[in-house]
Length: 302
Image (tube, rainbow, N blue to C red; front, side, top):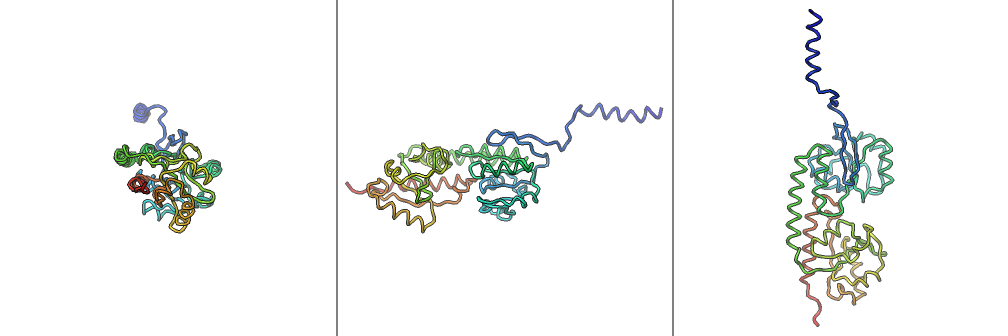
């Protein structure tokens, strides 16, 4: 009789427990922006972010408390400045990275070198890749980060708000007169942006066209002669004041270029655009305002 009494509670427990139940702390699989499956621990709240933009996106997705390491120039939001820095765009302190014991490292595909990504994986650390080449992809990327970090509610809310902001900007400038643009980020040689860069998409939203959109490289080097042949309506120089003034002076040596002839050489420098975090939408608004200013600049009298 005593044996029966002892077994009865155990039998009831077995009947109440689903067969082959997964442990509460079992790893789970998510997919990143590239469609790659990433297996992460269930307790996934020790994240190192290796790009300013991905750091900003993690905070926007409601996972700021999980970010334990990042790289230099991660200034968005202000709280990100308090996170430990483990490197910059050129170097990464792997000893510091390992010491932080991250459960996953979040990288931006177009920012972090492939060899660095492979080395992190070789150390046994899961790598989650963020890949945003068009502004319309930003909300979905935020939602996927919410799945990664278990903060879907906050991520979905921010993504919905961001999508609404994008729609409003696009609607405002959709019917504007087209403007062809050279977007210059370096001189001698001239570096510009190709068709797969996020800035290319921002220009399109503003009703402008990148004269080098046919180039697939994100930031291709081009000759001045090639830019002159494509004869842009507007030259946007993305540089600090001193070099920007030098580049403008160089362009004024070519008065036959439409942008030079019409006085449409403008400086555009917005760190939010360069970081490529959620505030890139606000940066796009400022870009569109500058393009609109160029549209309203009268050319020389005939």
